[in-house]
Image (cartoon, rainbow, N blue to C red; front, top):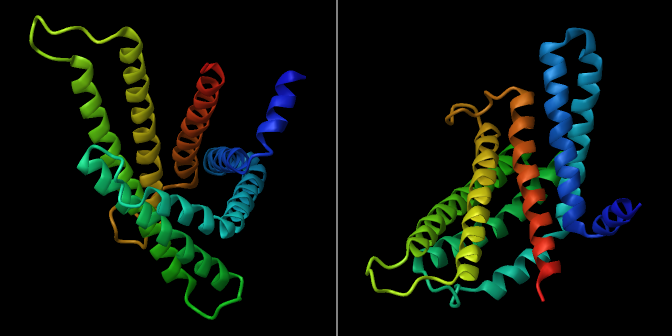
Length: 240
């Protein structure tokens, strides 16, 4: 009962609900794709799961119509990243925020075109929004790789024999940060593979993934995101 109450409480948060919808959607696509491709006798169930996955994805698209303001506030607060000590992290973070900010209106126009609200070519706007998403993921991957490199250098510590050793509490904090960056890196790589798949044919592996592979990559990315969120929540609860 306590677990159910905790889940209900978490789902009152928009971000937690979005993670759940995303995870369920990709899981349905994974299972549905496998059933359609590998189990002809159960292809009808697979088709229904793929339809459910499509509806869950559409649900997230509609909900993102209201994300622009939150993204703008975050982008404005971060600004040019004056609080960041590392110039590379600052640059990729600013560019990533810009790509994220531009992603939303492009997706909104594409959605409105599909809904016959605007008379424009939705395919072009979907391509543009996917390109901005892919760019944001690439920048995130570069940031995570750089952070892992810098954090590992700090963990190795000074090479001078007489130098004082790093306190264990700080070492554990850096190790936890490295793990978080590695998980973010893996999540972004999985999403980037799908982002390229959704670009127009002729670009790398665009359009070549079967539904089950898209579902698998999305499920991996979603579960990593859920794990990080749960771990961050647990760490916040134990912080004095």
